[in-house]
Structure formats: structure tokens, C-alpha cells
Length: 100
Image 1 (cartoon, helix red, strand yellow):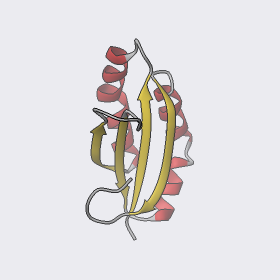
Image 2 (cartoon, rainbow, N blue to C red):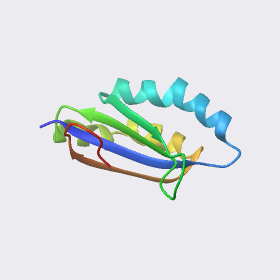
Image 3 (cartoon, rainbow, N blue to C red):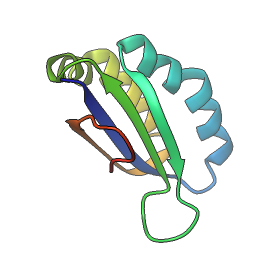
Image 4 (cartoon, rainbow, N blue to C red):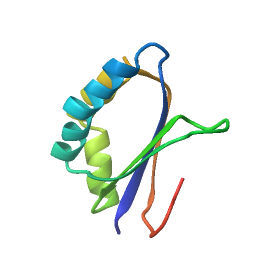
């Protein structure tokens, strides 16, 4: 069963430039290197929802959990925390279409 990792966060004010540089240079390649396939990236334009939502897919629940419990994942998300706030993530069964 394919699973989807859904991550949400808000970019820390005054960190936008550094955030985007980190995401492009380190976060996205790191997520892919660990075994997730990136899916969607959404930015909230209006309303009281997280500013950013990113999804990534793994081939199985076991593989996804192995990744998110690895020291490499911990380092990658710790580095992300230097640029974001209100981070959350969850694993769900992947289906077609928009999921949140």
C-alpha cells in the first residue's frame, strides 16, 4: 500500500529568502535521497491554514516509517525548523486527488 506523507508549516517571518534557498538546495534533494517521491507543494494564499503544505509518497507504510525514524530524517527536519514554525506531519494511505 502506497502511503503519503503530508507536511505543513508556516515560514518564519523575516526568513523567507533563507527558507527558499534551504528548501531548494537541501530539503527537496534530501527528501528524495531518503526514498520519498515528492508529490505536491501548496501555498495558502488566503485564510487561516498552514502557509505551506508538501506531500511525498513512499511505497509502503514500513518504508515511510523507516525513513521518518532515521537519523538522516531527524537532521533534515531539524534543519528545516530553523526556517519554519507550526510544523506538523502525518502519514496516510495515498489516494488520487487532493488530500490533507
